[in-house]
Every structure is written in structure tokens, then in C-alpha cells.
Image 1 (tube, rainbow, N blue to C red):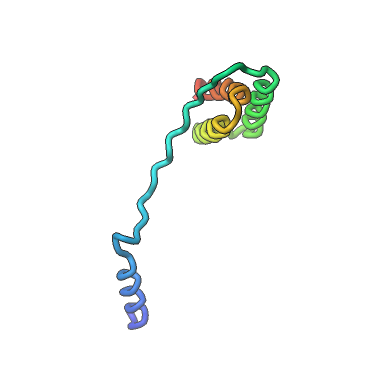
Image 2 (cartoon, one colour):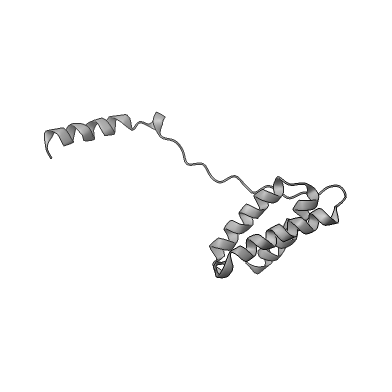
Length: 101
């Protein structure tokens, strides 16, 4: 190895120390969907329609188990940030997806 390449390799090795290595973070667990309060039927239907549109947009890739897992993850995160009525509609579709896994 030539001298310039050897010095570059030595500098790179010196720069990697345990203090500047970033540990890999595990994915945070999915939030539990807790539905409270009265359910507004219109918002529930809107949530279900949204979730069904997401599932329909997958097309034939819905047969891939990894795609189903990712879709469940994304819909759960979406439902967690919505009002209970809307989340209730999404949860109905999530329950069907979980059973079909």
C-alpha cells in the first residue's frame, strides 16, 4: 500500500473510538390504541374509509407479509394521533389485517 493511502487508513482508524460510535436504537413499541368517550359515527366511518383506502392502494403487494406488517405499523401510528372516533374506524381495519396475517 502506498504511503498516502496508509496515512489515510491510520487517520480513519484513529477517528473511530468508542465515544463517537452511535448505538443502534431499537424501534419503539407501537402505542396501544385506547378508545375513550363517545364514538361519533361519522368520524368513525371516515377513519375506516381512510384505512380501507390505504389497504386498497397496496394492490397485489398486500400478499407480502412484510408489507402487511409495515401497513399495520403505519396505520397504528396514524390512529394513535387521531381522535378516538376516527381511531375506532382505523382500528376496525387493523383488526382484520392482524387476523389475516
